[in-house]
Image (cartoon, rainbow, N blue to C red):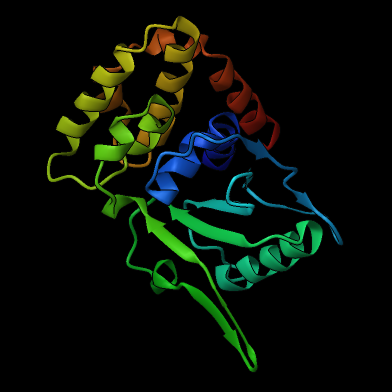
Length: 217
């Protein structure tokens, strides 16, 4: 299952919610999802959001594993140069690491080489309090990966919040996204104990991600 595509989908569908979470403040002013394909040799970022009031670009990268080729600090510099070149605005960059690891790469926050230094922010989701994530349906899928001493209890709490979503289509999609991300932390039997499998199967986004995964082989 393509976790990267799922996170891109959530950030693209709920940009204001993600911007509010990252900024730790409620953003009520309009935001705009910008093209993620940057100029020069095509390279696609995960999420690019224009905060109109702040006149700032928010760039999010979701990572499950540490890349084996180009290191993330160099990638983030590459993204920053392209975004700043393309839009001429301040660019705030955040890497959201999704799976716990002791790899030193997830603690890096800057690129340094000769006379160049570039800094960015890092969120290790397993260190984040689930409190803010549980308050917003758009962020519930990430809540299952947040910090807790009782993972099963947190999963049950997330499932309860998903069940409270009144709109059927929204509930199905958030449920599907939550179950997919929960797979990074829980086994299938544990997940199905809290979520009805048919809800996931009926979800449009689940089917879309599944098809993309099958197409990639």
